[in-house]
Amino acid sequence: MQIFRFSYTSIPCLPHSVLAAGFFDGFHQGHRALLTEAKKQAERLGLPWGVLTFDPDPWAVFRPGEPLEHIQSLEDRERTAEALGANLFCILDFTRAFASLSPDGFHQVLKDMHVDYLVTGFDFRYGARNAGSVQSLTKAGFAHSVVQAVTDLDGKISSTRIEEAVRGGNVEAAAAMLGQDYSVPGLIVHGFGRGGKLLGFPTANLQPDPGYLLPARGVYAGFVQTDSGIHEAMISVGVNPTFTGTGQTVEAFLFDFDSDLYGQRVRFYFSRRLRPEKRFDGPEALKSQLVKDEAQSRQVLDGHDPDPDGVYATAESRQGSLPGPGA
Ligand SMILES: Cc1cc2nc3c(=O)[nH]c(=O)nc-3n(C[C@H](O)[C@H](O)[C@H](O)COP(=O)(O)O)c2cc1C
Ligand SMILES: Nc1ncnc2c1ncn2[C@@H]1O[C@H](COP(=O)(O)OP(=O)(O)OP(=O)(O)O)[C@@H](O)[C@H]1O
Picture (tube, helix red, strand yellow):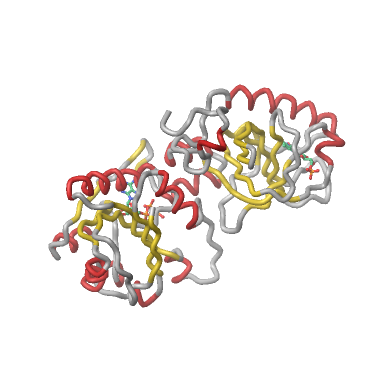
């Protein structure tokens, strides 16, 4: 996949293409329908296909200073588009000047980018005061297709709904909309050293990469992808109320694993919520609960693939422990 990043004022020489346009945080089932349509049109026209996205998030430009959390970083979005087969990934710098272009100004940008065919969702808007819509693309005679709403029982699948599900700890609902389990990358750092000595459950503490949304406090069954492969795990997001003086931690006990992970970049997958975090009378009571959490996690994770398209969990990292992409 070729990646291009540019401003609308200095567009590089791009190949003629079919592009799907949007922010695409999460590349959820609605977004994936756009990619399927882009691929279909590209095959018909004999062109490469890809994604037209924006960076930074328009919210960061219009509401600077407001904290923003995302399902994916730009790098994750790139990896997902590539795993889903895109040939091109075009990132337009999102600025106030770009956002204030008229619909015709935006059409000209598309022409200068050699976009021969555009794919959008039914509610795609563009240009100053969101004046551009699928109707204005038609009116301008721009070759395009419109993908109708991809819905589930609760309505249109959207990045906003996935964020709400993750924030509420409903990681299974998030996974159904995403097409893979919600995951957060980061660095393994030192914890308080209690897990192994006091509890017999040593944990790897995650310092999440900035900007990622974290699931609600609680205990989850999931996976940890490390340099040595993807491992079943149970994960805690919380303040460890059984002990005092602990800030919020995101930590995992990896099953059947005893290597040093300090300083390693990893990814935590949140597959299933098991229970809320609780204050126990002491380490022994917490330890008994952890034994039950492990048994329950092993049961729910058995045969479960957190990343069926192999977006982050590459074939090499799977080491035969999970079915391969597309299996
Ligand atoms: C799966 C799992 C569930 C946990 N559940 C709780 C809990 O309900 N209450 C709690 O106080 N701590 C809970 N913990 C956190 C432990 O208190 C924590 O692992 C321990 O304090 C070790 O911390 P350390 O790695 O910083 O030394 C849980 C940890 C894991 C891995
Ligand atoms: N469920 C869906 N069905 C069809 N098209 C969709 C769906 N969700 C998004 N799209 C389209 O995908 C492109 C990217 O949209 P965008 O990233 O704004 O998605 P979103 O999930 O609606 O985000 P948000 O919840 O932040 O508004 C747009 O062209 C949009 O119309």
